[in-house]
Image 1 (cartoon, rainbow, N blue to C red):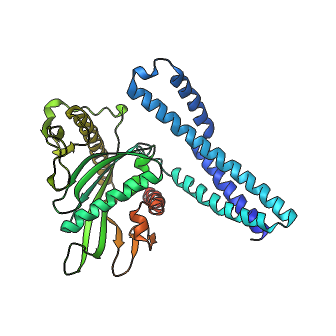
Image 2 (cartoon, helix red, strand yellow; image 1 turned 90 degrees about the horizontal axis):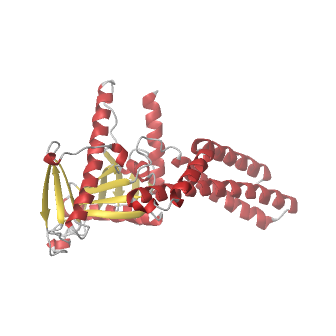
Image 3 (cartoon, rainbow, N blue to C red; image 1 turned 120 degrees about the vertical axis):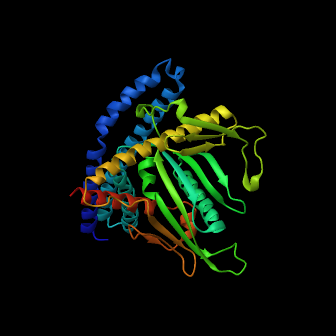
Length: 372
């Protein structure tokens, strides 16, 4: 790579990083960090465990953001020095190292730029994800289980904590549905572009004639509620049933009636949780899921009112959005962004950042066009 090309590339990355810094406002974040550090140092912090967890989580998230920005700025400055020295010494090894670092920096800055596009009302929240098998019988149930593993592997790759609240197993294989939480800042904004219908095309492993089967699974992504949401749920609006937890094939995994199912009577929303050991813990977890579902319903109702004032019919994010083809060729393609890869195995192992990033950019472009 010529020296002039390096200069142009480094200047472009510097401009992109400066724009990111302007959006993320590190000075404001450092001021908030200082305030949170005072709270963390208080001797009575852990008297209120929930608040303590909120404060420490927010502090960790902000410090991580600042560290990420500082690291990228330092790496960019070091790259400029490396290029200058390599050119002066005509050092091929240094220039090769600089080219490798340039590619790595571009990828890291692009990823952080996507993060700045998450400016929605609930984007910074943690995420509550539900996967349901749809048309396709046993293959759909198996596909839903594959998607569940895919998202859990994605979270694991990013070192995000997850908690599975409820899994309803299908009779032969796979799952009917599963609900889990991704406990990371901006998990909702990041994963919300995954919402919609996913389609799998493959030779069915459950068909003894080896025929090709198309199956579908739905993904729902909700923001986790916080105390500030103030969604009041009168006890009279709830029907609470308890039952015995069960595992794959109907196998009982708990000898007591600790699993909880809650029906919100006014909306007929039903949630359940069987992951915790006690009935009280399962009830608390189920109520958190219900809160998120009601929050999303309020958001959808508000959006419907706004769309009714427009001439168009609003968005269609909930429609079919991605195809996973394993036969007669191998490809995973997002039907909205046209982003595609030819390695379904890697995708099912959690390598979905390319799809998520392109989805976030597509959403922002769609919102900008709609607003214009």
